[in-house]
Amino acid sequence: MELTLTPLEFARRARRLHPQREAVVDRDLRLTYEQFFDRCDRWSSVLRSMGVAHGDRVAYIAPNTHAQLASFYAVPQLGAVLVPINFRLTADDFVYIVNHSGAKVLCVHADQLDAVDTVRDRMPDVERFVALEGAREGWEDYEALVAEASPDFDRPEIAETDLLTINYTSGTTARPKGVMITHRNAYMNSVGTLLHLRIELGQKYLWTLPMFHANGWTYTWTVTAAGGTHVCLPAMDPARAFELIRTEEVSWLCAAPTVLIMLANTPEDVRGTVPPGVHVVTAGASPAAQTIERLEEDFGWTVTHAYGLTETSPFITVCEKRPEHRGLSVRERGTLKARQGVELITSGELRVIDDKGDEVPWDGATVGQITVRGNVVMKGYYNDPEATERAMGDGWFHTGDAAVTHPDGFVEIQDRIKDVIISGGENISSVEVEGVLLRHPAVLEAAIVGVPHERWGETPLAFVVAHEGTSPTEAEIIAFAREHLAHFKAPTQVEFVDRLPKTATGKIQKFVLRGGASAVSRQ
Image (cartoon, rainbow, N blue to C red; front, top):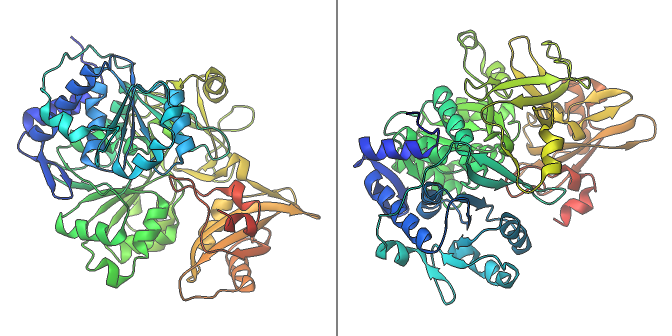
């Protein structure tokens, strides 16, 4: 008999082989795998008593806590569909996502209870409102329900093509879309992650990445598959993160480039002693080579760059180590590690194609769009057949990312297709220019957008966040760029800002930047 490819299989195995191994650390709470999955079963039993059945949606608005982690097991083992919502969104966003997904039960952390209370009457399909922490009048108490419940419930048959989660995109310029991830999608991503980024039995993983973000890049299941320990960090506080890395002897963490920058630039008196040997996986946007160099050279950490999208479960490439990389200098390795890399063994087929649909040559220069098909590509957008057809109607998922393929097969993103700057007929990669500016010692963050120009059509405009205590000038930044780039690629204007506008998952909102510094300051 064939077994269904589902991440729930990782739970069964961990429970059988490692019942007394530590599974979860959440503030003062420590749970073995036996204790954690007993709680998951009890919550499944409660949800069943609430009428949650196969295919029903259960939504969560919560940071990285043990209760949020449990949702990735307790909901899908009922055959139900988990909807993890970005807790940094607005109350109106909560209404849209809860209603669009048709969630039957809504589970909310204490920090978001006030926001949800203001819009509860606009969520007519929600039958039960549960407070994961801080229960009060009008809310059911998660901990009390779990404590009183039986761990016994009827386990339904689950197909690997069944929906596991609906993950909503960030929706920077339009309404967010619900990405349908199947049990097979998540299983294959987790297995591929373990093959390329091997967590060892008993190692500890720090939750610096939000679990809601593409299911925590499937580390919600991958860590369990490895028999590791989930160390919860509800809010990204660098001092607390470094403390946990030391005291819990953390070996792994994932971080978007914005968090990498935060960690790399945490003052020594705040971060304290930095233990070496931590493995960092970064994705979500192209990290600056300089940031990678800092973490590897100064901290003694190992940084691996992966690439993917919510629609691809998420990983489709990884910047894998190769023997020929060993002799490279720190700077050369940093530049290489900033590339997106090659297909994971399990992800499927990736091609960079031109406008005619033909694969571009592997010359590191010809730009095309990344397309992918295979095991990790979503089932489609929930209740949106038109968007599904546009994105993957020809059998390939079209990412919207412009990239080149190097002779060694490594893919390197140049830009979002919509963000490529065309100046005097020449294409300029904002990612390339940003990478150069980030090497300037006074630049903490940088973003490049194209703005209209009478002669050239478009010209690069740089937005720069300077390191505290520095005062770089526009002329200095432009001269630095011209020293390291072809002159037509260098920004012709520089705007200094206190911060860059970002989505709730840390992606820079370039559509806001195109409105100029005044638009940025209003964010």
